[in-house]
Image (tube, rainbow, N blue to C red):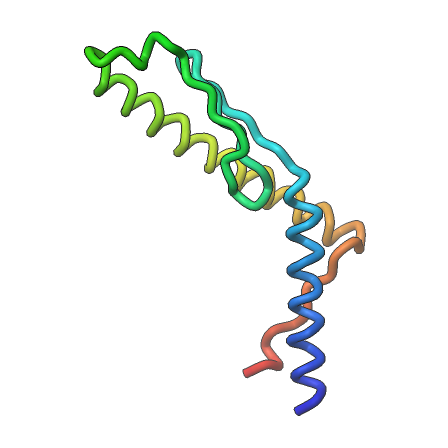
Length: 103
């Protein structure tokens, strides 16, 4: 019982360490003069919009650009973070515990 609690604690500690390491990662994506920056925990840290798309006559264009910006920004961040996690595991900086023993 105590070994399972220790495994859970170790997993929580690793998750906190990964969050700290990955939050420093930043991914930017630009589309039609607009930019989004997303950190390694998938939080939007910066959003810059081209004033031209903010015109009321271009509402649909603005919605499309923002949708594209966010979708591609998140996709790029996911790819970067997956690669970074592999690097951290290979370097030994983080070690994910075997979860199969928790069931």
